[in-house]
Length: 73
Image (cartoon, rainbow, N blue to C red):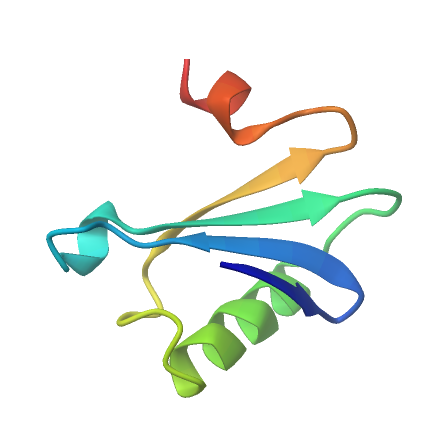
C-alpha cells in the first residue's frame, strides 16, 4: 500500500505469510536528507495505525531515481 507521511511517499509491502520479519517499508526521498528521528516517527506511525506489526520492520530509504528492485540486488 502506498501512503504519504510527513510529505514523504511510503510504500508498505507485507509478506503473504503474515510473518512481520519478511515485511518491508520503502521510504522515497525526493529532495532532502531524512533524519533518523523522522524515520522513527514514520515507523511509529505505521505501527500505531496498524500498517506494520512491529517497529523493527526493515525499511529502505530510496533516493530519487531508485526503485525497490534495484535495492534488492
